Amino acid sequence: MPLSPDPYAALRNAAKYVKQFRSKTFVVKLGGAVLSDPRTRKTACEQIALLWAFSIRPVVVHGGGPELDALCDALHLPIEKAAGRRITSAPVLDAAKMVLAGKLHTDLLADLQAAGVPAVGLSGVDAGLIKARRRPPVMVTEPGETQGRMVDYGLVGDIESVDTRVVEHLRSADYVPVIAPLSGGQDGAVYNTNADTVAAAIAAALHAEKLFFMVEVPGLLKDVSDPSSIISLATLADLASLEAEGRLTGGMRPKAHAMRHALVGGVGSVHLVSGKQSDALLEEVFTNEGSGTMVVREHPVKHGEARG
Ligand SMILES: Nc1ncnc2c1ncn2[C@@H]1O[C@H](COP(=O)(O)OP(=O)(O)O)[C@@H](O)[C@H]1O
Ligand SMILES: CC(=O)N[C@@H](CCC(=O)OP(=O)(O)O)C(=O)O
Image (cartoon, rainbow, N blue to C red; front, top):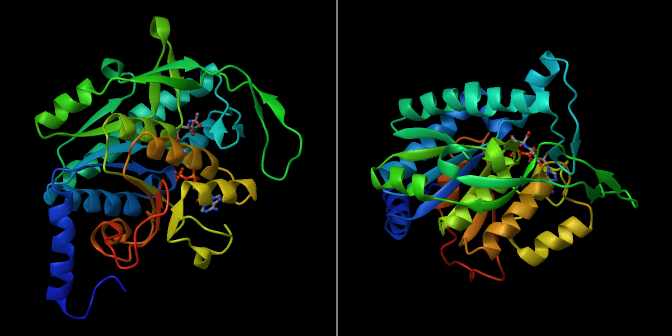
């Protein structure tokens, strides 16, 4: 239970974290499953507003995979993914711009504004925030398969550099940047880049204290079909074992890669929390037990020590 029957004890406990995290950078990645339901999107925005109210400095990165799937469907464009990443033709990239830097992005900004967050929207293309190179064809092996296959992802960008100046500029004026997962290449090219990958690159470049992935599931699961198999604390080695055992499928594969990138890049901890369960983000930040999964580079936090 997150809150003790004594509200003052709960407040005292939370105050410890409020003090610890004041002025710290938290990157919060909102997954498509959270964004596609207006109610869960609003709840996520309200939790981000509370972090902001407690002087934590959030930077938001959003996905939008399910909405992009829906638009592709409506436009009769193929939906093809390999290892959790979209194969992106020129018309699919146009659809991605419409969703990720268009409707979904604007709706999220409006919800953040309504919750009291001074949000400003950007994509990775703005001010050269994320520079990428077109991904060359690569060998991909799906879980359960023994043989890999060559995949040409099309107009998908592999991140080459992150220039956080525009983000810092906004933050110095107390705005909260909200970043869409598109990236810019040479000669005006625009690429589709997985939002988890973008979130990890941004978190590492900003030396964030924490990176949160808000997802549909309660956290990292030993068995994806069993929500009660949640893993509360994991190291990079645990993550590698789960992957080797084929326990990470679909969108969890780029997420695991992103977690590794962020932690190796200096982010203090990465957290997987439910975007469906109300207040799961707050519970993860402001309680000892947390609500989801905390991933750290190596072992770890001593028993009873602050998880947040
Ligand atoms: N071991 C696992 N633990 C938790 N989720 C997993 C696992 N393996 C696969 N998944 C799937 O990964 C999904 C999260 O990735 P993804 O769909 O890309 O999320 P989002 O787009 O919301 O960020 C979960 O909803 C779940 O279906
Ligand atoms: C290359 C690639 O896979 N890009 C993603 C970008 C959006 C995304 O990552 O959205 P979620 O966080 O909701 O999955 C896509 O086209 O779906």
